[in-house]
Structures are given as C-alpha cells and as structure tokens.
Image (spheres, rainbow, N blue to C red):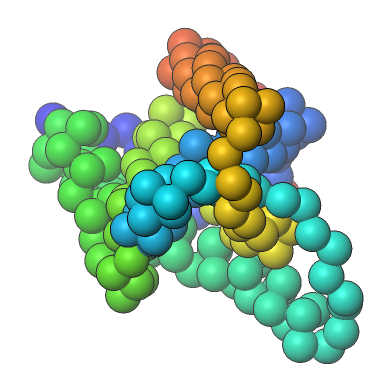
Length: 202
C-alpha cells in the first residue's frame, strides 16, 4: 500500500482552527497520559492513597529558561517530526498499512528518547503525532502538536495529593472530559478531508 504523504517539504503555516485544535489536544493528552510518566511511581502513590494532578506553574524567565523554551518548542519538534514522521513514517507508509507504520514509528520515537521510565507516555505521544501527520498529510500539524506538548512540560508540573471524595470526583471528571475531547478532535481530523486548507503556503 503506497502512501500519499509527500516526502518533500514546502513549508505551510497553520490557521487558527488547526492552532486551537492542536493546543487543546496537547493539553488533554498531557492530562490523560500523565500517569504513564514514570508509571511505577504513579501506581506506588495510588497504593499510598495519593492522586497525581497537573498544576499550572509560572517559571521565572531568564536566559537559561529562554534557551530551554526555544529548544523544546521550536528546535526539538522540527527536528524530531521531520525525522520520525516526515522521513521514517513517510517511508514506512509506502510499504506498510497506516496502523503498522504508525506503531513502528511510535516505537522508534519512544526508544529514541532513551528515557525508560517514560517509554509508555512517549509511545502514546508518538501515536498521536503519527495520526495527525497521516490524517492531514502535513508534518506542520505534528510539529505544532509536538510543540504544544513540549510547552506543557514548561507550563505544568505534577503534584500528588491525598485522596479525598472531592478531589477523586474532580480527578475522574477531568480524565473523562479529556478522553472525550481527544476522541472528538481525532474524529474531526479523521473525517475532515479539507483540513489542509487551514494551512497557508509560505
């Protein structure tokens, strides 16, 4: 099965719709996937009666932080998406089914980060980067989602709180809402064949 994903790169910029969809998708994914960031630590805390929450944080902006932000939300997403999605996934799609190609490229993406405790979360991120790339046929989409996902690392931190009836209900509500939003966004991307018109050629 041959892929229709082009291997050449003519840079395009996202419209407001794509921008907002990828921002929302990254936040909800960060929430839903957070237990898999060091899953053993998460389950040990669950057994101790603690829940993991993502909390917004404001960091002091200095030169080191500015360099880190540029590296995380600009340089890394472009390099990684061009390699893992544009090249690797693009080639795999020409010889494999979309499901197989996305699974393989996601596995390489996860292992390629050399962070054993985060293999699960990295693999799932890779799946979604692959899905949006394949469905939109544009690496710019996965770069945008990747940038937003890395931005959540800067904007949110994990905190464990003792389980209460109130925060347990809050936790379940947030998780269910995140799952529903993710499903709706992916469904929209999957069904909307004209999503590419939201990008403008440079």
